[in-house]
Structure formats: C-alpha cells, structure tokens
Image 1 (cartoon, helix red, strand yellow):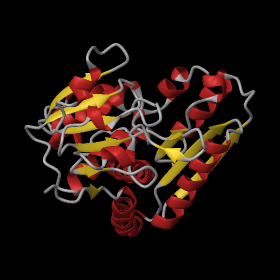
Image 2 (cartoon, rainbow, N blue to C red; image 1 turned 180 degrees about the vertical axis):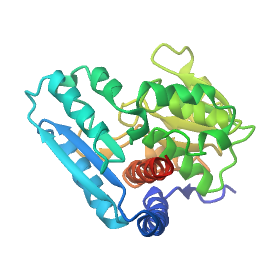
Image 3 (cartoon, helix red, strand yellow; image 1 turned 30 degrees about the vertical axis):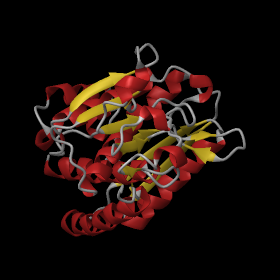
Length: 295
C-alpha cells in the first residue's frame, strides 16, 4: 500500500527561513549599526506585480530590513530605468536591488539588468551571477554566499533540502529552459549531484522522459500541463508554475489532484514554491549586506 503523499509546505518552510533571517538581521544591525536595505523598482501598473512588490516590502519590515520602493510609469524609457539602477548602485543604504519583471509589454529588460552592480543583484539574475553557476563545482560552492543565487530556483532547492528529499544520485527532469527558473535550477540540481535532463517544447517523447524522473520540476508556464500519466510512481514533484485555470482559480503547471496520487511528495500551488521566492530574496539581501560590510 502506498504511503501518504508528503505535501511540501513552502509556506511553512519560508516562515522558518524568515525567522532565521530576522535573528541574523538583528545580529547584523548590532554589529554594523545599520539595517540591510532592499530597493525595489516597479515599472507600470500591473496588478500582480504590485501585489508581489507589496509583499516583498512587507517581508522586509518583518525581518528588520529597510525597503526603498521606486515606482515608475509604464512610459519610462529604458535609458531612465538604467540611470535609476546606476544611482541605486552608488547608494550606500542599498544592499540589494530588485527590478520587478516583466516590464510593461514584455519590454527588453537586459540593459537594465546588465546595469545592475552584480554585488547588489538581489534577484540573482545579472548575467555575471547567472554565469557563476557554470563555474561552481558543487553545492557547497554555490551556497557559500559568494554570489547571489536566483531566488525562485533557490527556493525550490531549499524545499527539497529542508524536507530531506534525496537528491544525490537521483534522476531529475526539469520542464522548461528559461533563465529565470529552468536553466539555474538545473545547474543547482547538478551541484547537488543529481543527473539532470532539461526538457522543452521540442523534446521528443516528453511523457516518457518525464516518467524517468525521481525528481520532476515543472516550470513550463502552462496550467495543469503535467498529468498523472507523465509521473513515475513515487516521484517527487516540484511545481514552479503560477497560472489561472479557466475558472480563474490559481493553479500550477501540475494537475495537482491527479498527480498527488502517484507522487511521494509534491508542492501545492499556492503555498509551495511561491512563498520561497520572497524568502530567498531576503536571504540574498542579507548575504549581500554582509559581504559589503566586510569590504
């Protein structure tokens, strides 16, 4: 008889991490006489982005960090956005900078991201910091704090680690190849000694490839794309997707109710990877502040 499926509670894990960060931030303030500071830049009026940023600002206050919010109209030219980023690079009160993506109309964001000082890249998306993932030999180097890790992939990894899921030697399949999730989470899994296959829209026999996975990470951006027939009995399923079903209800990339019957462990949506993204953003901000304090 199959054991009950473990629901991987990202909300609780993120609460635990925030409690740790609150204690560490208190120590930092006592030692340095200042709070770590996170600057958030939001271009335009996208409701979901406003909610995300508001949650990030609230989370900063809860752990004892300063937050600086800089809203810009959707008509802001990229040159002004780049100038603002460079101004924040030079601000001694700012340890981390977050540019909320996507920009209005999915505008080209690379110039603004490249303008970021990599030492203040709170989201871990600067090309230099992403490139460091290819330099690291293992997870010990990746998690050393030398460079910030992308928040959402790192959050997914922390769920696995803190839930004591076996990663080393396991076959991991990642659905999606974006620079936001698919590529960095693949490198992190490799750093933890998994054997990783990255799938995408041109992958042949996708269902069969997914059924090989001991750990299946879904980051493909399609609601309930992963069906029960794509999942091996006893697999661990990490759902990174955030979508709306035809009824407007929040859902992930995984058909949760159908897949949970076969999985040994699974993240829900909401309450899985989502809360971890903000927790790892705060983690990065504190690590960047500590690094700056030593310079």
